[in-house]
Structure formats: C-alpha cells, structure tokens
Image 1: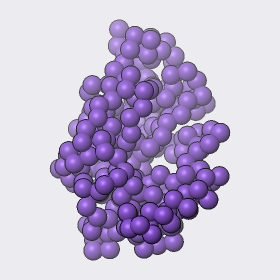
Image 2: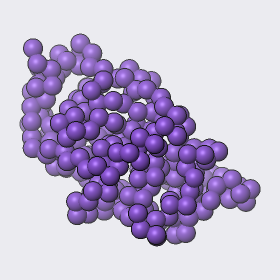
Image 3: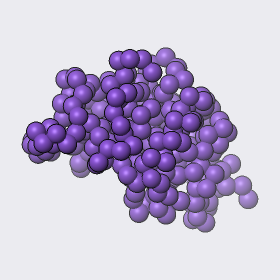
Length: 256
C-alpha cells in the first residue's frame, strides 16, 4: 500500500472497540484503504449527526480513538469483534426460497444499475447511507478496475423492473457486503444467492457481512474473531477475483 494509506498505522486487530478511527476523507481512495485494513464507514443518519458529534468529541477528548486527517470528521471507521461472515458454498437456501427461485422468472445481473441499487438500499425511514456515502461508493464503482478493491452491485430483475439487490466492495477474494433491499418478497435473498454463486465461480467464497443479525443467521452467518478475519483478509486481498456480469436466470440456482 502507498505511504499515504491512512489506515497503515492503525492496529485494527487490537483496537479496544468496534470504532477504530474517526474522520478522514470519505472518498474512493480512503474506502480502498479502509476495506483492505478490515474497516468500513458507518456514519449515522442525518438526523443523528448532533448526537454523533457529541460522541465524537468525547471519544477524541478521552483519547479512545485516533483521528484521521481529512474533512469528514463525523465518519466512524468500524471493525467489529466478533465479525459476522458467510461462506458462499454454505449459504442456507431453504425450501421456500428454492421454490421462489424456480418459479419467479427473475433474472440477475452484476454492475448493471449500481446507483439504483444503492438508492434502493437507502430508501427507508432511517438510513446511514448518507449523500456523502452514496457519492463515495459511486466514485469507487466508477474507478478503473483495480486489483486492490472495487464497488459492485447485484441486481434482481422482473423483466425490466428492479425488484431487489445488494452492493458492497470486493477486496481480492473477499466480498464485503454493505446493504441489500427488496421490492418483492425474497428478492434480497435471491440477490445474495446470486452473489454467492458468482463468487464461487470466480474462485472466492468469503462474504463479510460485518455484524450479526437474526436474518443473516437464518442464512448461515457465522461469527469469527476479528483477528482471525483480518488474517484471512490479509491472505486473500491481493488475489483478484472477477465477477461475471452478464444477465442470468435465477432459476438455475435451484435446479430440479
């Protein structure tokens, strides 16, 4: 990594809390450095910024977290311990989801509608996907292909209508999932199944889902120590994986 890497000096593995740094610059270059170091940004929703600013000042004043140079002082950079992950070849596809895959007639693509997927993920009553977050991930998505990291989306279509999807950052052979959404029942699960299939095809199987949720637990999520996750990330982040992008029927994911 270049000497300007803002995360190079951080001891992420031994950080005392999930927030390992504050501030910096929310842009494509910083996102690449962060994900390669096992960190991700998690700003609060706009209405929570005053509370976040108070928390930030308290953490900085007490010396609990380092502050990265840059204009985005309200950005917490997180690395949870334990870390929640999915293994692509161990995704739990229950009978009801198999039936949906066989009967829905949907298709799936990669990187065909990145901004629309992010917008779909942000379309909820309260969201951490702020305008600055959208701009940063869109910048990373538009960046020339790089072996270091890239932002990608999975789209699920009913004809020409986008019914679900997810987005995240592919770091070598590790896909770091950020968010997913659905406009039809099970469409986000279909997007996840599609992602896992394309990861395996590309020679990758580790999907970082960041933090534990009951929804992801039902799909096969497991918890690992942060130090173990970081060690695996370090071993896999410099081996490129390329996701196929063409449109495919999702019925193939649940053969009779």
